[in-house]
Image (tube, rainbow, N blue to C red):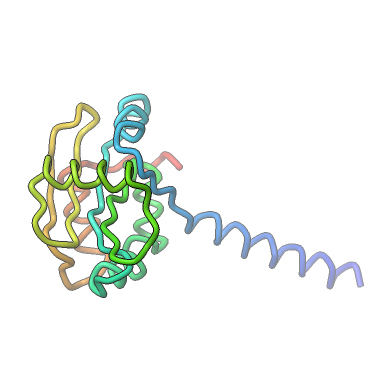
Length: 153
C-alpha cells in the first residue's frame, strides 16, 4: 500500500511540475513589462492578436506560444505582452486605448504580429503573420535576435 501511495504521489508531482513548466505569464500593461525587462535584463515580446476572431492568432497562440519549448525559452529570455484586439471579448476602455496606441507605435496593420524589443525599448525583431513550421523557426529567429540564457530557469 505504501508503494502504491508513493507511486501516486510521484506521478502527481511530475504532472504538477509539467503543468507549471508549461505556464507562461502574459502581461497586458506595456509600461510594466518594459520596467520588468529592464530590471531583469530581458527582452519584451509583444504579441498583437485578435484572440476571439482570428483563427490564425488563436491557433498560433495555442500551438506555438503556449507550448513547452516556447515557454522554457520565454521564461529565460522574455517578458511577454499580449496586445489583444477582440471583437466580442470584454476589454476595458483603458486597455483598448493602450493596445491601439501600441498598434500605432509599432505600425501594426495586420494580425498576428510579434515585435521584440530590447530592454531599452528598441525594436530588434519582428514577425508579421504566423509562419508555418511551428515553434522551431520562431525559436531559431528569436535566438538569433535575442540570444539565449540556457543555464537560467
